Image (cartoon, rainbow, N blue to C red; front, side):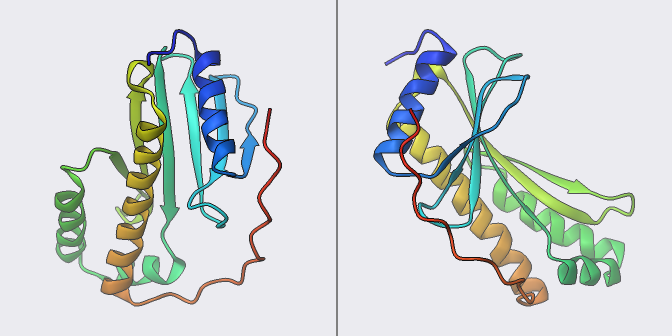
Length: 172
């Protein structure tokens, strides 16, 4: 089913997310027709964004990312530049043929500070299956990034977090 307007697409996406009892937070964003943050996987502290940028009519972007742990940043700074670039190249090779996009954001020294990934599709292919496929691909990419850094540098000490909030009431 093709959607003719951002409002129709937003209504369908909200309905599907509510059916699955996701916690939905609407983000005020003047550059988007709609923009919200959801818990994915369901009931966790992990978040993804669903955005329809006004400058790209008919496009929907599912956005996720991860900041690199301070302990991992320190270990990357200690690596020589060639070894660090080989490590980044391995990640790029692993991600290049996935259906979602990625961006490794670096500082002035070339140290990756965060990795963002997104899954994009147009309203003409928007279905509940397509939406959740994109969310799942982004989540799997998140898990891959976490695992590859943990395997290389060890598991960092994680800050304590409060328990996830109970599912929100459906947003209308």
